[in-house]
Image (cartoon, rainbow, N blue to C red):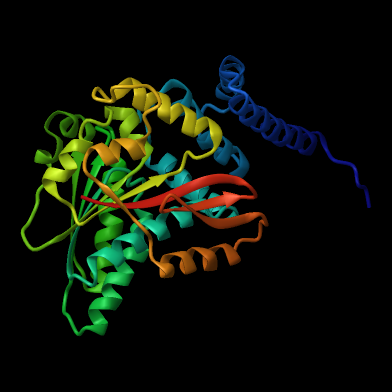
Length: 338
């Protein structure tokens, strides 16, 4: 039996090795703040990966370099050319990433549990999500609401989601609505979802969001919205008085945190001084941190036991629950009240 690789196999292996090598160098650039070299590496990757096609590794690399490009430039590429096929490929790449990394599940499960802890079994819930992605992270939350309703012999609990999304999020919004509505129908949940464009929200803030008396309201934030429109709307949170605000910071590795702080400094008009971080901004808006429950911590630790890659662990810091890889923090979830 021959152990020699043919030319196609060799070329494919070289491409995959190059991608891994480029990503490693890219990470090193951000660690050392060599942003010009990082841009040069991104340019090479952009030339070689023009679309999210190919094998799983190539698709994962494509979306990774797109995310890095967003961090580097502080802007988001136009998604108007996004096709249904590309969205399907994005979902597949996300699933592949979730199978090898606990980051997506840690982010969603801790945020969901933080909301569940605060709403205390309320059967009328409204969530304002500023980073809905493709909406899959709400499945476990909706299932938990349905189970709580069944245990209390309550028929048809009601859940509303208001998603603040980019203007070009047309196909994604349709897919999210179809999937979540179908899922809630199976769970006997009365469900409604509305989409508010970031541009509209930027001008009228929470006046663009429908509020209903008697609902428990939760707000889910991430660094993405602050890069898009700044942090002025945080002062409005106290006026709408949600029951809980959950902040999921997935940019705790050195470069993400540094860039986010720089963005806050540049974009928050009332910051007053350099070095302002999101925690201080929340505090100035009259928000108070809340320690997450022991059950949320237990759930996060159980999640990590299912991960094959070693080195991940859960830590607590400043009332945050932090996912770390060895000594490096990756994602932090914090809970706030007004």
